[in-house]
Image (cartoon, rainbow, N blue to C red; front, side, top):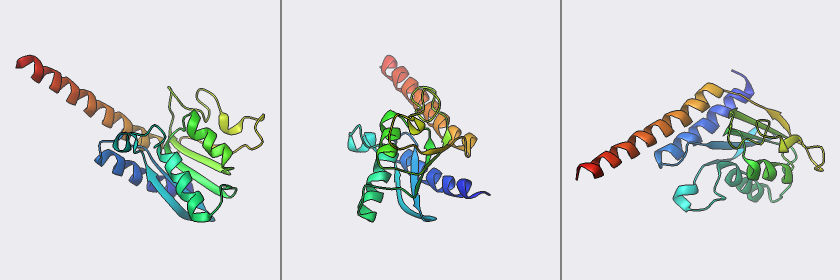
Length: 162
């Protein structure tokens, strides 16, 4: 198992915590000098905050822990390709490298729709490694949404029967 796969497994554990709370299962860890210094998972529904993405929470926690907004030697591991907000936060916090699992065809900004992490017009670019444990990360999401659709369908049928 590679180092990237090892840390992605940790991000997957965070994603499972989100799923247990009924959140979209996205998890992240931030590694600094080969040590996990922050962990987070999606909390948008729980906290009713649009900014409560796993990446935003893990970056915030790491900044507090290190006492600086500059995360120059940090590596962000996240189970889903970052959205524009999270990719922007990674650039602005000067994260060295972003490693993600599943691609996001509707919102991915680490190569799918665009690549904000390597946009040369910004004063910082991050290395991007994509598709690490992609199948496992993708299955977490597709299983979650399949179950959610089935639940909504059952609720709709129950209402119709009343």
